[in-house]
Amino acid sequence: MIKRLTIIGVGLIGGSLARALRVAGACEEIVGWGRSPEPLQRALELGVIDRAESDIAAAVKGADVVLIGVPVGAMEAVLQQLKPHLEPQAVVTDVGSTKGSVVAAARKVFGILPPRFIPGHPIAGTEKSGAEASFAELFRNRRVILTPDEESDPDALALVRQLWQQAGAEVIEMSVEHHDEVLAATSHLPHMLAFTLVDTLARLEDHDDIFRFAAGGFRDFTRIASSDPQMWHDICLNNRDALLQMLRRFTDELNILAGAIEAGDGEALLETFERAKAARDDYCEKSC
Ligand code: NAP
Image (cartoon, rainbow, N blue to C red):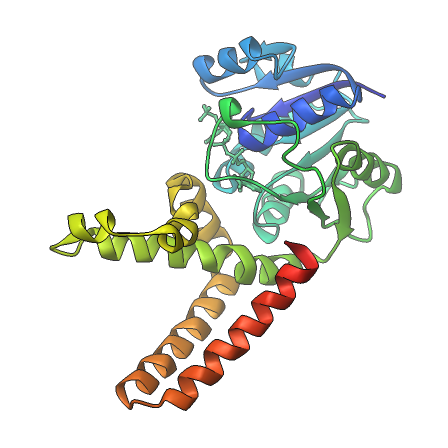
């Protein structure tokens, strides 16, 4: 059992993990740290955390596990603040959506990726933010990717693995590079498409009618455009290379599609749609 878990940034993800571990009886005490008092107080009132601390030294004092749940653009500054106060044996982990940038931030602050810092990323979330949106079941039957390196402490890795398993997740290990490439394709690109589609339509002259007559398909496709803009700003800038590669590939494919429509090439259109339908049906059969 973890004696003291400190969550740095008690939002949707940090708050949901806190709730899940409480339900699992995995921690004696859950402490929350936040930069602003109101959301932290709300997390306390909701019972997400047992104690709220605005002083980071007090928050991590005596903590055996520190989980960082802030946007990836804030990681380096948070690590810098944490560094002088961490207990020597504390295990540190994060939930950031990009891993190359988090590891680079840790190396910048500590000189190395500390062996007891196990980078992580739960492949689960919603378009909502904050502790109010958190719920204990968020990670149940979902995957969590950990990206340790060859210097990582096996005990720290086992502890972080166990933490996520107690929250109901399946834990997978992957290299940082592979993580960032895979997530650029499966998460970051779709978010770019949803944001751009909604923004494009919203700026059309007859946008009122467009939204009035939008049906279920539009709602399904664009749900993720309600995600937090600051979080996605950070993700784009912190997974720049992999995301740009996917965006360029997608732009090429979109241009090919436009060319087929322009040329009246129905065969090419059918081929694309049939390939896509088969791939999605297969994905849903295995994972939906
Ligand atoms: P969230 O609900 O907005 O929570 C973010 C938390 O970080 C809040 O407590 C916020 O405090 C704090 N924070 C924001 N900016 C900060 C800064 N500059 N310095 C210190 N604290 C700061 O976001 P979330 O969805 O939980 O995301 C947290 C992390 O999980 C991100 O790294 C994200 O990439 C990753 N993630 C998100 C999802 C998802 O679907 N949402 C899925 C997987 C991973 P305030 O209350 O003061 O703003």
